[in-house]
Length: 239
Image (cartoon, rainbow, N blue to C red; front, side, top):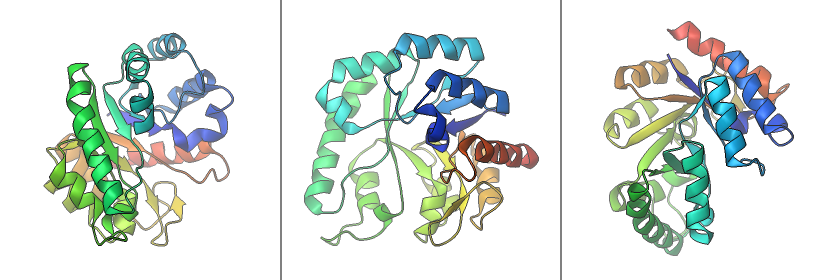
C-alpha cells in the first residue's frame, strides 16, 4: 500500500535540506508526501526530485493567505510539483466573524481552484469541535456551509472527544485523505502504536474506504526520521 508522510514530522531537517529530506523519506519506504512549506526550494527542483525518487505529492499544507496574496504564482508552483490537493492547515475560527470570513473565502476560491485542477481541503485540530466564543462549532460550519474536501486529523478529533472511525464513515464522500497519528488524551503526541488513540481501528477503516493514510508524528523524539520510521513500521505491521 501507499503511505504518505506529512513533512512537518521531519521539520528538523526539511528546513535545512528539503531535497535531502525527500531522499530520506523515500529510503524509509513512504511513496507519498504532504509538504508543510517548501523552504524556498524552486518548484522545478522539487518536481525533478519527486520524479527521481518515485515520490508523489498527495496534498500540501499551505495557507489560505498564499492564495489570497498571489493566486497565480501559488497555483503555478503547485501545478509544477503535481499537487492537486491544497490543504489549509489552520484558520482563525475563534469568532463568528472569523468563521464567516473563512467560509466566504473558501467558497470563492474553491471553484476557481477546481478550474485549475486543484481541490481545496481543510485539516482540523481539536479546537474546531468545541464552541468558539460566539457559541459556534467551527467544524460543523465548515461541513454544512462549504463543500471543500476534508482531511480528518484522526488524533485531534479523538482528543476533542469525537470517534474518528465514525467520522470517516459519515464524511467519506468529502475525505481527501486522513492524518493517521497517535498520542495521549491530553494532546501529547506519540508515534503510531505508542499512544492510546485508536490508530489500528482508524487504519482498518481507511483501508476499507480506500482513503490515503498520511502519517503525522510531531514530537521529534529523538528526531523526526526516527518517529517516521516507527510509524511506517506500524503501518506495515497492520497489513
